[in-house]
Image (cartoon, rainbow, N blue to C red):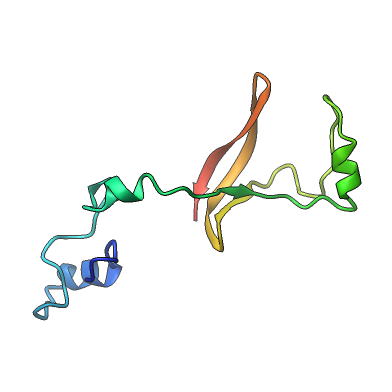
Length: 112
């Protein structure tokens, strides 16, 4: 395992079945929490952008500029389906929108 890898499932499988080749399989088992990784203090402070996106049919920039407080925008996204939550091209899971006081946020409902 290189210094840039967090861990590999292949290592976990190899340890589980007793298969070990010198230098290929780490001695420690698979991490159960990312916070256990030696690089976590650095990784924890990396800025990332989470995106929860739904499709809005025929919604234009001009519509965005005309928005007023209290307006509701219709989406074709089914109400019963959670919204994908992504970082870059990686889907982390699914979420739902939550309004608290005057702020909107997302609640993670499932991991990918």
